[in-house]
Length: 507
Image 1 (cartoon, rainbow, N blue to C red):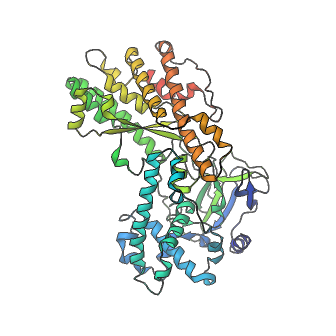
Image 2: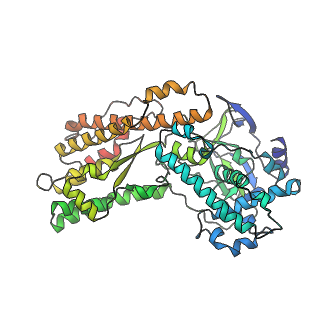
């Protein structure tokens, strides 16, 4: 590490208030502030020439392979294209040893990166998440297939690559480095940044930025997590309200104007959900790259670090599920956590609705994303629409809380779904919390954190819905009723704040 920091400084990097490595409780290594750091202050500044960036592969002696094999290296052709470039570059520079300009940086990289793919079957079982375990297995299969693809292409250039340097073990190491330490496309292409990569993740406002040295543009993080569906998303469907509206219209024999009214409301909610997903999806930065650009880690506009504090970088709006799958760790408290609820669609439908759903390929399993911080409107709206009946309820009540008897039954069924999901776990939150303090390994600690917070999300959601059930008489006339504070200190939220999506629909 001394060699790395000395080399980086000699090449123009600046990190005057950062010390590394420092041991923090309960026993992990991080970066420490050696003096107070103020808002909008650069913690680390890395010149363009020190970025280990994927585009360097195009300029390398094996760069001809990039244009020869667009099926691997064209972003439009292969999802791993940027990773392939960085992996090939890592292996090529590693082979050069001390002759590589990057030698001090390469020597500082860990030789063993602990990811979920290295966990044993018994350790994966501690996650209590068959979907995540399946994702890990699919990711491992995908990595092996990609190794075979990349190896066959790189072996075409015998002057740069040999069979000995293209083993699966070396490929896996390089892939782990890229997956856990690269900075995405914020630099226009995937890149590793010496020193900047030394900051651990937390839900802070500290962000990274590439561009002119005087540029300050704080990244605003969405309140929504950025996680996508599991790898096997083909087996589950996030509910589309447009399809749901058509299902209701067909099974209830609605008049055209009423059906259109339902479809308009459904479209509104679909667009709302897609807009939220779009807000947290990564968008490539558009700029004209120049060699005087710098890569920096900056504090947020209201953020400070005191001398002696650990320095963090926010990797993004990532839940513990994402952090485990891609980085191999979980946080004690993560405001972006959620739990997936998988429900067989047939369990929520009448026989007529089932027949209609089968005929319209509606999907056999629906997926509801239950976050810790607010009521799951996706589940409530879906159940409400399926319970709606033309002969009893007004058209407006199909997607809005307008009929209180319908609303009561809707919330009761949602609570039943959540409780049934909790019963699937082999341990309770209390049992998991009792184990947290005596976890025998970091892997077990990470697994306990993960499964505990998933269950807490369900418990919190049940509390929200049962509070709504008791408050329904009040909501008929008073949409600004204040609710008791939620007994969940890490979140510091009130029921009223968490119920806002529902209260807006009531209003």
